[in-house]
Image 1 (cartoon, helix red, strand yellow):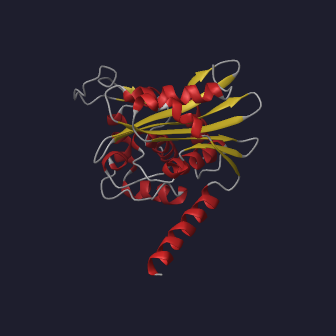
Image 2 (cartoon, rainbow, N blue to C red):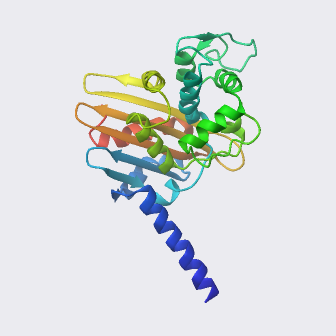
Image 3 (spheres, one colour):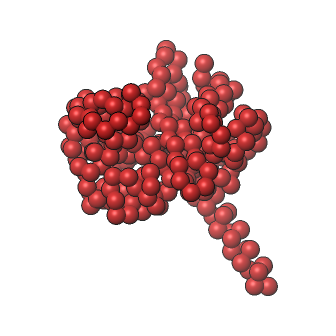
Amino acid sequence: MRYFSKYLFVLLTVLLLNVFIFPSDKESRDDWKKYYLSYKGDACFILYDLKKDKYYIYNEARTLKEFSPASTFKIFNSLTALEIGVVKDENEVIKWDGVDRGREALNKDHSMRSAIKVSAVWYYQEIAGRIGKVRMQHFIDTTQYGNKDIGDSVDDFWLKGKIRITPAQQIEFLKSLYKNELPFSQRSIDLVKDILINEKTGEYILRAKTGWSAGKGPDIGWWVGYIETKDNVYFFVNNMELLNEGDEDGRIDVAKKILSEMGLYR
């Protein structure tokens, strides 16, 4: 009886979480597994159709698990830095510190606009240090970002710390960003939306950010963002284990295949 009660409690908890996180219509897309077969590791994908208020989900159980946000946190970091004014705008340049980080794209001066494109960790560590722990925690708490645990180190907690976020929470954060519902000024939100543009055509605008978390267990890859068409907006999160060299390409490749299948990307 004790074990049955424990099982029932866990089941009810999961059901409640599903109701809270996916409150509207949802459709399981187990067939999307075909796009991950060559990568071997566990993965999940969420696509949310704003107009239909509908979620399309591959591997729902994984979408409720917590992972380090890694470089997807640069979205939040950018918003906070602009809001506080530790950089005046997205084009203010911070001088490279001269440390060779193994990639030519990183070993140079950067603005926020260029740093987010090449995912320059040193730049975002610098602005996080300028923000400081107290102010960073304030905005983390106000936004209810992930598990809200930034720990004691303000300049690497999204890489090495305890902060975690689920793929489902990533979707909700992106929705709030698009709808201007985050606790940041319209100016900060507009600037971050602009620097997140990956592609812009006559048919759509694609805004997105990659992430790569390395630590205990398998490396985890992210690609999160949204695509605006002429009459709708679609939000997506790709989260996958990176088990082999080259698997990181799947973060974007798989997502684009799914978006293409849904008629959203060309």
